Image (cartoon, helix red, strand yellow):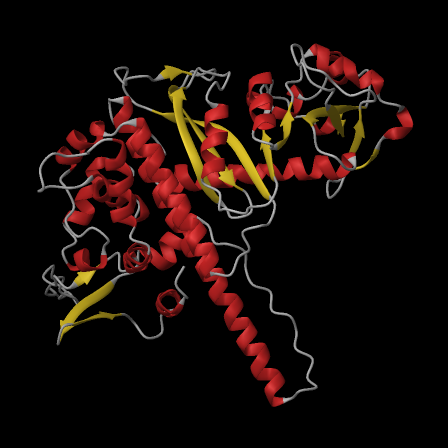
Length: 490
C-alpha cells in the first residue's frame, strides 16, 4: 500500500524582525550609560591625541565598546561584528546601536596609540571604583595585585611584533595585572611572546596603582618566577608595595634548602601533604643592594607511584634533578617537590605561603579574558590594532566582572530581606544564614544573562521585552536589571 509523504508538523519562517538573541546587552547598556562610559572613553582618548578629524563616523570610545559588546556575545574575530550588525531588533538594547562593518573596524583600530589605550583601561577601572562605592564596598581595605602573562596566539607570520615562545607558539605576551579582591583587571600590556624578562612589569604595576581608588589600603603584589628581577622588586619598593614572588628552581636556589633546620618544617595551610619553612639568614639576590629578603620554602611529598611519566609534567620540574633520577630508578620510594618564594612581608612563613598560593586565582581571570572575552587570539596584523583589540577584551571582562558583583549584591540584599521578614513574623525564630554564591564567571554571565532571546516591542514611546514567564534565566535577568536601576548613584 502506498503512503503519502508525512506532512511537516512545523513551518519555519525567518520573518520576525522584533526578535533578538542578545537581550542581555540591555544590562551592559544601562551600566555603561549610568557611568557615561563612551563619553569618558572619548575624553580620555582625545586628551592624548584626537582619534578622528571629522564629526561623522565612530569615535574611539564607540569603537572599543562596540568590540567589547561583540566579545560579550561570543565574538572573537572582527567578522563576528556582523552578528550584531544583523541584529536590528537588538540595536536599541546596545550601548552603541550602529555597528561598523568588519572592514571599517580593521581600518580604524590601527589609529589607537598605546597611551590612548592605557587611558581607556584606566577609565574602566575608575568606573569599577564607582560601582564599588554604589555597592557599599569599602575603599580602604588592603589591596592584592596579581601579575601574570599569557601567550596570545596569532596566525600568520606577518603579524607585527609577534614572536615564537618557548613552546613554539607564534604570538604576543599579554600581561595582566588584576585586583584580586575585586576580581577585575586594572592594567594590561602587550609584548613579544619570547620576551621572558618582563621589562614592562614596573610600568604595569604603576598603571595598576594609578587605577586604585583614593584612600585604598596597603598594597601587596604577587607574581610568578617570570617576574623575578631586581628591577621589579625595586619598583615595588619605590611604590611602597610589599611583594611575594616565586623563584626559578635553579641549582643555586635548590642549594639553599641546606639552611633549613630539619625540625623547622610546619604543616602548610589547607594543602595536604605539604610543609613550609623559612631559610635562616634570609636571601639576597645577585645585585640586590638592600636588606636581605625572606625566603619561604614549601615542600610536597612525591611518591614514585604518583609521579607522572611525561618528561614535561609540571611536578617533575619542582623535584631536584638528583632526587628525580633516584626516584625514577626505584632507588627511593619518595622525595619532595620544592617551591620557593622571596618576599618582604612580615608574619609567619605558613601564612605568607598560603597568601602567595592564592595568586593562582589569576589563572581564572586570564581564562575569563581569553576564553570568555575575545582574547583567544589576536586577529590583526598591526601591533597597535592588536593592542586595541586587547583593550576591548579588557573592557568586556571588566563589564562582566561588574555585572557579576552587582548580581552578588542583589542576592545578598534578597537574603537580608528574607531574614528580616522571617524575624518580623517570629522575633524568636532562628534564621539560618543564607549562603550567597561567589561571583559568577564569564560563561555563566554570557549564557544566562547576556545571550537571552527576547521579542523587542515598542508602544506609546515605551520599549518592552517579551520573554517566557517560566524561564528562570529571564526572571534572574529582570531582577538584576531593576536592581541595577535602583542602585544609589556613585
